[in-house]
Image (cartoon, rainbow, N blue to C red; front, top):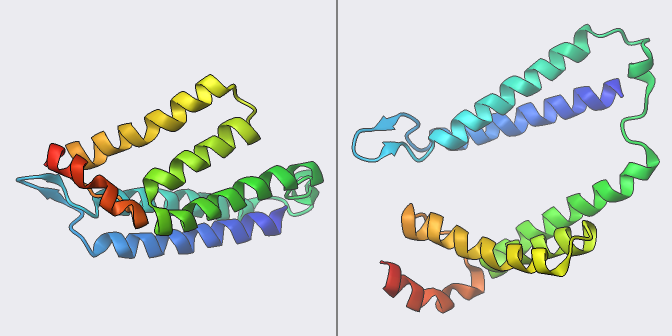
Length: 165
């Protein structure tokens, strides 16, 4: 378990540093006319993730390597299948986002996780799967004017853009 904690903390620190560098490519301070700069949220969330990963690393470094906790497995065998299911479905959703866009990938991801993986009823699943893209569009694109990736579905949004913009 101890090795897994070290590796995980170091991997999170590396990812955080990379995200912070990308966040610094945009302004991270307060913009007088528009509020927080475009890199503020990515930078500061990544900085918090870096700090937490550092705390995990320090905690493990100080812990007793002979303790029972240090000898327990990182993942129990019965946890491996659900973990892999979530990890692979997340990777698939991200890959699908680049091709089909957020408004296709996210509902499919939700459908899988709510209905198939979580065994939630059809009515609740349908409400979430149909409402989430609508809320995302209204919040990000109509309100914040942040255009989300649409992939091959981009032409379908022409009428909505004329209505909203």
